[in-house]
Image 1 (cartoon, rainbow, N blue to C red):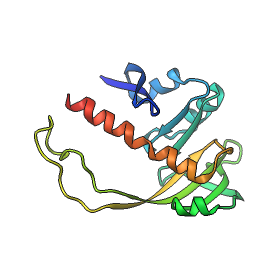
Image 2: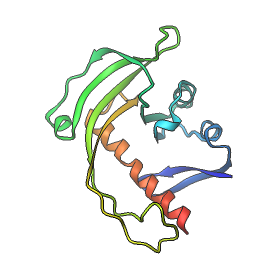
Image 3: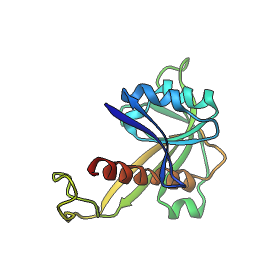
Image 4: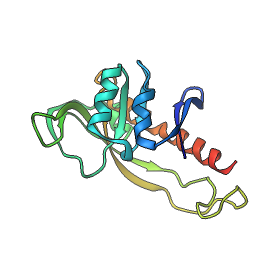
Length: 173
């Protein structure tokens, strides 16, 4: 049994929950006007189309296996560059021109601080955090939001960490 939460980042709490099969639940709980932050495991054309059909928006991290072709280069601002944005482009997502989606891809290099969470091998909060160096990652993010700057797209996706912290807390209580 899995719990699927619609997490309100601004409130720092779940807005809705459903208990069932993981990837089939989200499209049934989409809210118009909401912005969904989804990780690589949730990326699919069907889900992206469901977001758009509902009037919701999304920022998703693309898995490496997804193909896309840049059709427009967007200019980066100084603020975008300061946020680690490497590129911003309008793209056709997918390899088949008949079914590809016209979206936006933002590539950014981010340094994640060393974790302050519990050791992942130990449960129930009885062990202290382990030491690890900061981790540098390159994010390839896809979104349907053309009305915000690239640095805002990166900042939105950065809020996924709040969701991860909630689930870690939820699983250990």
